[in-house]
Image 1 (spheres, rainbow, N blue to C red):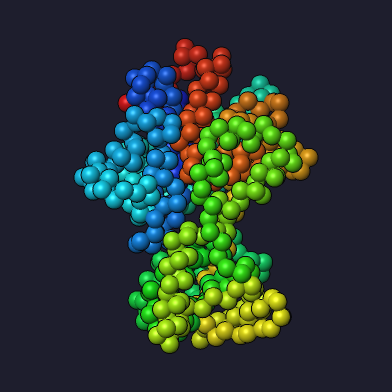
Image 2 (image 1 turned 60 degrees about the vertical axis):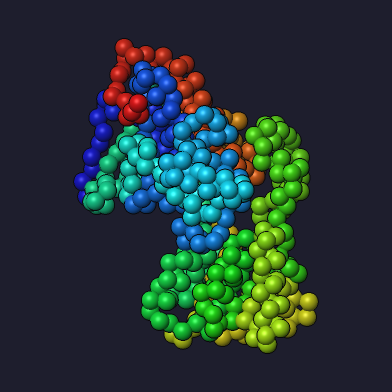
Length: 454
């Protein structure tokens, strides 16, 4: 395996790990800053993404699913309403601005918002390298201080070849990973809902008969999976298993939604730990294990219509849990327990879908030994500044910023789109401010060729 190293004249001021919506928003903020300054700051920026192209929850881009956040909370508008990277500018570019306005909605189709992300990502493609999985991050010490990080990634087109890039600051935005129940194992017949669309397409191509499918979960993704499977396999029984009595409607009322305001992040960040916990618990119903009311009513209507017609394919197994899963060549045997009585039923199924949510990836998963330099509180949670910068040991002057995984410090919006634009602006401002205070970065000391093109 060969390794390439970037030279001393190509030290990055910031290197982003991951290129989903969060780091895409940061790339845009840094690009726009360069345009405004004419590139005079010489800021060198790069992003590394393991996927071969931009993608955001592709496995759940169901044709009629809509966003649960207003289009005004796009990549830029909350930071700069005049930016030409906004969703409205995208619509104008695509020739659909008037058509969208005539819909009188704040919530675009999910596939359309994904296309918007791709459109924006293409405009800053010079800042990102795809198929560049990060495999190691190591500290670089100069004069007793850790001033840089060496980031090792696979080389696109030749994954056995490694490239090392040196950076003064990192911005980690690797997103969430699928969460599975303890002991759960995925297979050709057992999926996480993040792979719903490609898996369904594969079943259809292979002509595999589907007589029954089971979905575990009570949130939006679970309800969407139930609805999609119900439409995709018109002869199959679709069983929705969850511990609640019924799906809980998402609280999207105006006052509850204020928890997603940028000012709410300030309030949450400065609050005592017990207040943070209370706020988080009080407002879980805005995002976690809840379902849009329109989808709840649609599923309810479908169930009633089937009952009238005497062919009940949609089955809600509420107040229940899956107790055992057995796989065979012919399918999956799912044991479901009805919690009030303890009665168990074995479902001979063809498919089992875990719509059991996502969880943040640990910082050690991507930063390795660098994680040991990060300070933690008495509950072993990362200490993170208001500017999203991780607190590090005193001898570390190179920075690590986090986008995601900071619910304990910044609240519910840590992993959501609601404050993506604002957070990108805050990180951009912090990067620029800290760079201006570093005497080593005097232009006479070093003048690397900028990669943020005007």
